[in-house]
Length: 137
Image (spheres, rainbow, N blue to C red):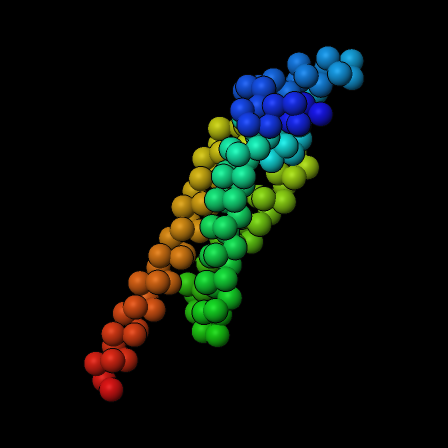
């Protein structure tokens, strides 16, 4: 109900516990769901931007790994481990928000940087392979 009342800007940071206490006469520290917490605190546009960015980065890196999985080498196995770690992080944030712990949030940003690096590394490698193929033809 609170998200619908303030869809653009939300109610402000850390306001979920007060809103929930006011409506239900019970106390909860946070929403236990990261997208709902962001939507409540900062609004639907911020939620769409943040969740869309994270999901698109994760899915694009998954797609990149899926296309290059015909080769089996150590780099592909490590990239798949990054993907599995990111998916487990995303799934865990649908039932509880551990992101508020500083160490977990740093790990999340490292995982996101790894996803970006997987995509950029694959683009660079495929461009180099295309240039080598053109030279030898």
